[in-house]
Length: 259
Figure 1: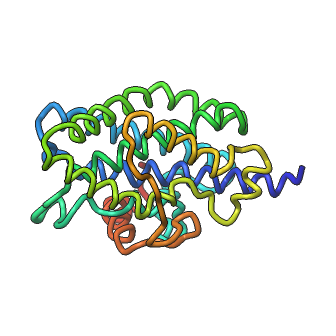
Figure 2 (figure 1 turned 90 degrees about the vertical axis):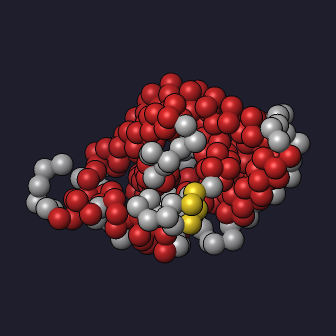
């Protein structure tokens, strides 16, 4: 085995795992005070905090592998150096958190449910296939994943089986999410090597597992694309740029401080 190739592929996979959780945690934080009811406000805040914690574990492993300090990896990288799937950086709706936030709860439920199920399938694959320290992180994260998945599955089922209007809005949200959801299963330009080195199972295997799990509950069309490009390869929207500016605002104000 080429140790340099293995290290590069491991680092690529870690950035994907870390950036996915980091960016979705931020999008979740934008619902604080705006969720449908106070219990959901607390629950969603907790889930977003967990996601940020998961991202921190991955960034810490990247730090151990010589990629730089974890804080710098989150706050000093330009958007084109992020490896998250584009669907996760898209806004919750129109407006901003502070000005006219007209957010779509259906879109949020679908995105989080679909992502959480994909994340569980990805972590299960890592636990059996991968680099030992990454396996240990995956096992630790999986303890919290059952709660996250149950939470979003409950919301998804309730809205899909509620009123005709709710069903219609959810079907529109599903279509919107799937337009870019294929990016979740992509490993980017190093995908073939990542799979060959047994860091994780193939994109097609995980995607089919995800489709099978979802269709046990809902017989819906799950055809997906990457309309806006592949975020694994550094292609992103303006929404990531504005998100990172907000996330790093305090850090950049005093870059020499210990965080």
